[in-house]
Image: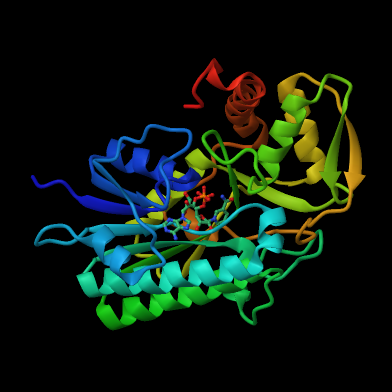
Length: 329
Ligand code: NAD
């Protein structure tokens, strides 16, 4: 039997890299594309192409597959990072991501791709107050995202859906909550809160002090990458149309995140609260749609940090040694 084929855009990144591994484990023939090689993992992709997907011709090159076409395209390429980056680079984010998405969606539709997965974000939603009831996917409209990254995601969801309608391409859209795990950005300014906390605590001495943006009360859900890839895999081949939230139902404050990392690290640290781009105050989203196809989060925060902290600690230790002391993979 002929192998199913998948193109993973953004395969050199965190979630895309994990998705390549998952699709290979499921027996797919996989091509990854990205601007860069994966920094931390040796991917099992059958092919990997370095391409800038802002360019329409590069989107067509990514999709070229002899006489045939890909069974599915998973679009995870984005100029992206944590809150610090999202607020500092809003023009670059809007410009680069809208180009990637309009060009890739059009190229996939014109190539006759049957299934197209797009990675959106819960950043499309307005801010919430602690204790507010769960928000469903439909409540993204009327729209009031907290940042420009969220506006671009909302627009690109619609670009994908419009092409799906016109070209008969099955479009599946996930709105990811904050995702974390090993082999993701952990330093350099684009890292997200769980990775940043793991790094700060790994670098701190026991009893030392770390800096944390804001007053520590912001509420978030953190989804381990194993749960996220399971959700993507199920959603991509489901019949669920329209956007679908994927996130762990455990909501914690930033203070609880810090306490969890300390517990896993076996350290005590003092927290110095400093000004910084915290983002929204609170989150609480319905998972009813993704759960309707059998998905349920399995990795809650402490277990997820147990799977993540040792990897970040090892990266931080290697980075503090002279350059020749060992690879990062
Ligand atoms: P990531 O930054 O690790 O991966 C994105 C990849 O896209 C990077 O490897 C980057 O090099 C690549 N890329 C950027 N511009 C490109 C271009 N012009 N051409 C080709 N490749 C390009 O991010 P991630 O955490 O793996 O996120 C994957 C997707 O999920 C993104 O669309 C992101 O917006 C979305 N998302 C992630 C989270 C999260 O918490 N990680 C939350 C919500 C949504």
